[in-house]
Amino acid sequence: MRPVHELSIAQSIVEIVEQTASANGSGRVRSIKLRIGELSGVVVDSLDFCFLAITAGTKLEGAHLEIEHVPLTAECRSCRQTFAVQNNVFLCPFCKSGDCSVVSGRELQVSEIELEDEPQEQT
Image (cartoon, rainbow, N blue to C red; front, side, top):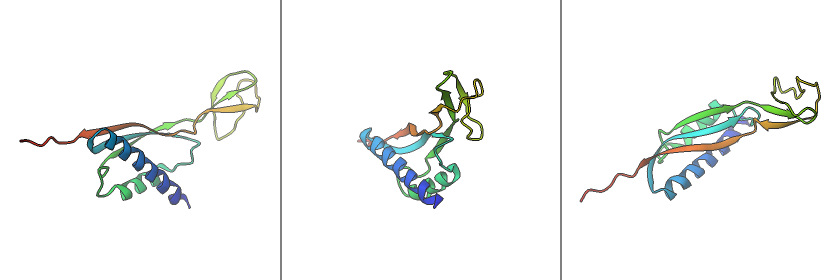
């Protein structure tokens, strides 16, 4: 089932990028920056494979996916300290409370799109 998950994500990315490129009157897409959180469940290699497969023959063909990995961090509701979550153990290292909330690590965002200008016709 894993590749189906990444395929639907890749399709959503393509839709977002195509809408943005169209709205900006752009030609081809050079690169797409993504923010992917540790807790998002996305397998980056599978996403990259699916993206390459569905962009063949489109404005996005050859576009480079740049991935920013967002670490899993939490905030302790007891002592208000923020900490990096290790091995998915939500236990505050400062006060040992288990009453914590996720601060980052769930992200799955298109953060930047680099577009090429549409070539101008010469008259």
